[in-house]
View 1 (cartoon, rainbow, N blue to C red):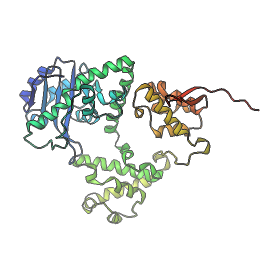
View 2 (tube, rainbow, N blue to C red):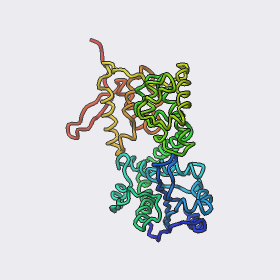
View 3 (cartoon, one colour):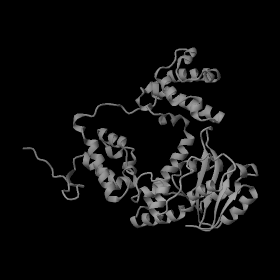
Length: 402
């Protein structure tokens, strides 16, 4: 853990001095504080950064108004410098917005921790306590980071989010290396990078984040998709949260029961009259255009059906296998697969091994994917160890007709 006194950076000159201190470091611990309640893109307020020798908090609005952060972004995006974050998806997204690219390479300690026995989505404070035995003060969890001036207690709280990151990185990297899992974790970092980039590139995929979308009929899903894409553009244009334009549940209602004429929008509960006055024509036009699309342009939905009798309990068996393998390997089960993917694996009538599922790719396939395929195809026999209560498996003996 680094003990160098911290700096609070509020000017471009001070930032240039900080960049000189950071320049020769092979890695940077990074975190952000932001406010996201009133804007489309969360408002970046603080950037915390630490090396083995230095630590600082950058007051983003203050430095931005004093000349910008170009030199800092150049340093952060240097591919010769390792960036260390914890649960960094939103941090990476904000860096991509302001720096123009996702900083690479990066190491996410939450992802890494899940691969060496710390459990899924472990909180930073929990990780610090388990690795360092230090309990962090979380009194300022709900601080309004846009308020100024910030107190010394608030700044100290913010700085703790990077103070321990490099030592945790050392600890996790060592464990991953000993287990031979560094290639695995880099696969996961690549998936995270793709998820951050994809979310920014594909407004027409945004509808899939709306709870209940997959319960719609395909034609209605097309309406929801196009309404969600329209809302994405409108919220971005006005720089307001998506819910400030139209809430998710209202979009679902419009998709399920599309209005026959524009005036019918005023009968939709939750659709504010001010939004109808502003955008009623655009909303109605978007709905009508989606309704005219051919079936080939509708979203593809998995067909909901009752499990066939021969498949009853199979998903539950596969879940038990996943949990057993996860326990054996000291890895979070949620890192391996999802219930939805197991159901798709079971539902497939043929050529299961070529399905486009994460559990059938890379390290997951080696760890558990092939085992699941063998279980479904009847090539394995399962027992419960009477002593450990763990599931065991072995090649099944071929059956013969009598």
